[in-house]
Length: 259
Image (cartoon, rainbow, N blue to C red):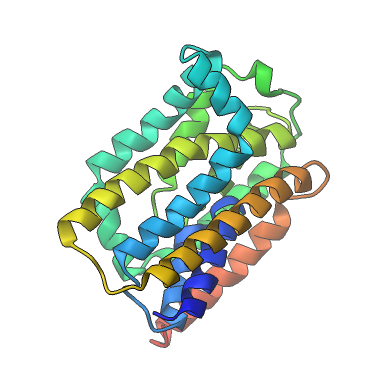
C-alpha cells in the first residue's frame, strides 16, 4: 500500500465515520477502487484509532468531567446507550465480519440508510436538549447504533435519526450521536488490536500507517464539528439522496459483475 492510498483511506474514514453515509461501506468501496480488497486489519484498526483521537479531543471537556466523577449522569447515558451494540456485536461477531468481507449487501444497506434519514428528517423537530436526555432516550438511540453493525448502514446516520425520533433537537441529536460513538469506536479498536496481535504484523510501512492515522484524525475532527453546525439549519435529505444514488450504483455494478 502506498502512502497516498493510506492518506486517501484515512480521509474517507475520518469524514464518513461522522457524516451519515457509512464509513465501513465507503472504505470497502475505496479498497476496491485501489484493488485492495484486503487492505489489512492493522490499517483498519489504525484508521479507527485516528477517528477515536478526533472524537476524544472534541469531547475532551465531557470526558474530563466523567473521569472526575465516574457516576455523572453522562456516564450512565453512555453506558446504557452502548449496551445494545455490545450485546449484538459480541453475539453475531463472526456473521457481521463475513458480511463485511463479501460486501454483497452494501448496496441495499446504503438504500436503507437513506430511507431512515429521509423519514427522520420529515418528522416534526423536537426541542429536547442534552440536559434533558434520559436513559430511555439513550437506550433507544443505542439500539439504532447496534443495527449499524451492518457494514453500509451508517452508525452516525441511524443514531442521529434515533435522536430525532426521540424529539431531540437537531444539534443535540448529532452531538449525542458522536459522543455515543466514542465507546463504540474504542471497543472496535481494542477488539481489532487483539486480532492484529494474534494474526501478526502485516506488511504495511510505519510511515503509511502514520499518514493514515493523521488523515483520519484531522478529517474526523473536521467532520464532527461541521456536522453539528450543519444540522442546526440544514436537512438530512441531501445525505439520503447521496446514499440512494450510491446504493443504486453499487447494485447495478454488482449485477453487471463489474464490482
